[in-house]
Length: 450
Image (tube, rainbow, N blue to C red; front, side):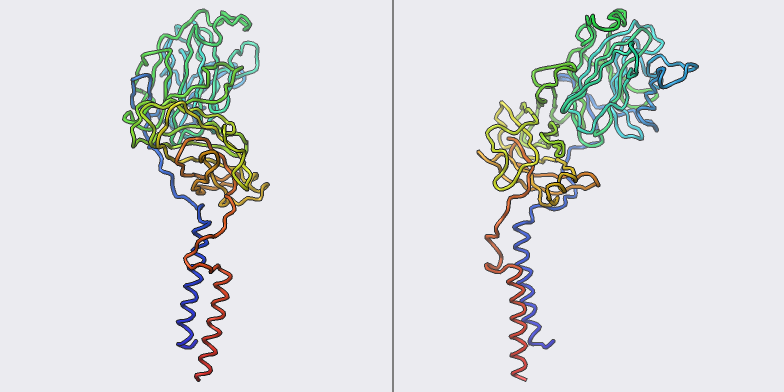
């Protein structure tokens, strides 16, 4: 290449790079995010009313199912003690006491509850628990009394954003369970209790034997923390008030979840879940667990909100948000989440995480980096900056930066027209043509001078 042609070629290449850079800036909204700014996930607190205490999981080298060691006629032979109870937690159990603790094992973090003591001096009992604000991956890993037989009166149920159980147990036995899944990252969930006469099975004449528990009562609700062989024990002040377990520290704001309308039991799923935030300051990042959304293939996983007022109440429902069109202009929505509040939320911003099934994207012919989250923008939808966080064979995980909590939808990015470019009038095709023309002109000029 002649010395005269080289500078011309260099200029042309710069023009092309600038032009392509302009396109990248127009469509470069999505990419791969290395990490979402999340609350600490390696410390845990338990809150009830104004009381907050730091706790540590009980750590063992086994799964929570193995640790709990539930035994009945279906799980163990008749030459083994199998009194429909937890045998792995015998050293922790107390008469007329309900235990609550985190377990860290080979299957990750689990939330465990055990009521009464096997072979103890108890006369049975009844209780109902609802765990509200659970991650969508959460499920019952242990169900103390989940067998085939007329004496099994436990009921296990759940809905969008919550799990529940109604339990009744006989004298000298335990009842309880363990929730596993989704607890290895940031979370905040609330246990809504109903012991004794407040439980779903109180005065339930339709049961196999309403006197099965022989009038026994839970007298204490105890949180365990620390060494699995000799944990610290803290008695909660109330059997009636909800308890929240979350990642973080007691210096952070508290969050309490409940189902809409204080509904309870297996027959009333409610319309959604409500998060009540207390003690938030301007700089606090509050982790919120939304409902899943309107579409099975699109799931709203979590919201990290900053700028909430000291006291705020936020409702999540898997509906299309009121007052907004079904889809943004020129694209079709894949799923919605309704977020409402009676409070003035002020200048709230944050990060929304969501996941989308790969099959749904393939069915719609959408590439992952073409997808975006939209938030409420006046009477319409405003596209939010969205990034691809992770990918598995089954789904893609996304995060999006938002400036409000007014409802969300997931849809393809809106078709864009390049209106600005570092070199106006130069697109990639035009710029490539420029290269050819400039090189050709330089070559001709060089030959003539030679």
